[in-house]
Length: 130
Image (cartoon, rainbow, N blue to C red; front, side, top):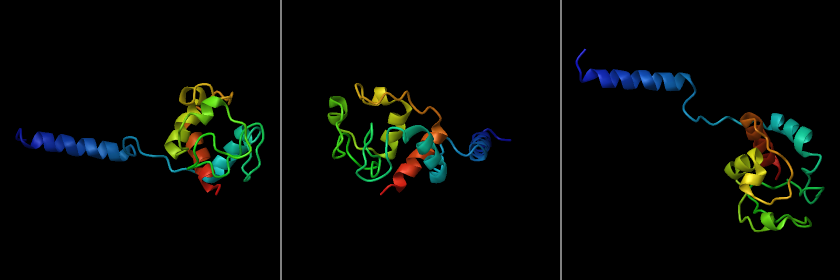
């Protein structure tokens, strides 16, 4: 094998291995039904999935795309009111993993959902609440 072909062969082998592994950083396809179960087991004690129904925490109906601290009728922490974030799937993923890190001073006492698949499924469910 000539020295010119070796890098091409090596690159082809690397691409095949990446493809077999599902790609580097391949996004997990969210399962909204599984996310609904996560919501009801971990979130529903404090949050509602109904429009305008706030509990200990604000309603999460329509949360995807909403600005922090903007759900009417809910008394947010100063930190959340001033966070100036939009709840995109990426921001929600980071927040749900560690709320206090993303919005220091939030009154949400939740320690975080550390399982990435469950977070993605939960976000997939939240995206259906429109």
